[in-house]
Length: 225
Length: 119
Image (cartoon, rainbow over all chains, first blue to last red; front, side, top):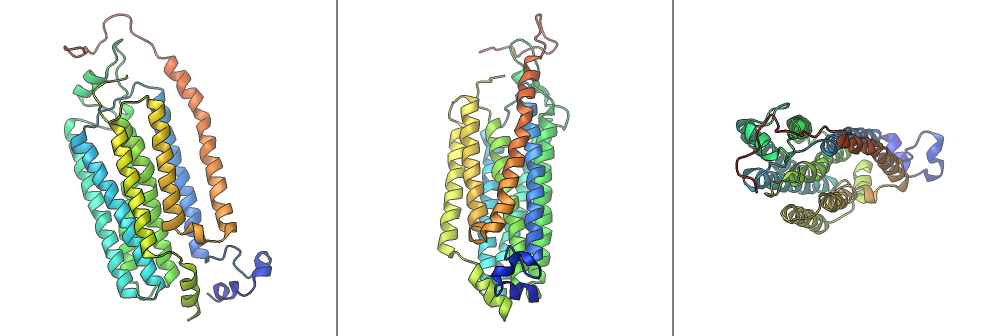
């Protein structure tokens, strides 16, 4: 606050205490550090998934309908939610809190749409018989290699863990944004920007989950084994 | 109000710019979906998809998360350490290839019968 205001006036003493060397507030720096640590969490999960995938016979079971269509529409929802969030932050930087609130509500709408679509998609797979440690019987038949090695049952474990943790992030982001929208008049611009950082991060993670989990597991007919 | 003016000068970028970034992100996603149905070696597919993902992530971080307009010291604190940590995780892959090679291959008929119609 007063430190933040003073930061602009003392560029030469950035590293001597009392100012903000990164020229962002403490809370914003905190969110950036959280994002770095959360990126490592997701990187570790995705690399663990890739490890398992490279060391096992892995099924590639996703049909165009419903899996790929659903996940593509979900991607579109998240990308659009990022755009509305940027508009919200931009409105807030101009001091237009009412408009900022409207854009944040639009962001929440897209986020909730993402969760609903994702749960429908999960439901499809669970109905097919996918469980964290079991594959549906017909997947086992289709994806067993010619020399009899069955596909890894860990497909479900990696799928539900990674998409589940991501969905949890979207859900907590929606709650976070609801609080921000409700208190938008009391919050400083930087606080709204910080909630935007979190939301864009959730979008960013999906940019890796979508190709690695969905696009790489498309059922194209010829099974490599 | 001081914080207000401060914010205004620091939130760069017009709505037109953000819409064009969004257009790029949607376009690259469509390319990914198209690639999913292109027959190609799995390693090549992985490279291309990861490349596209990194471009998309960079667009989001730079423009939506506004990092391009922050101070260089913040960018240098956040980005290189993260990239190095993620790259270090790749140390596990030689082991995963090794363990794939260790897999026992059945000589006789497997326990689970393969589908009746083989292609």
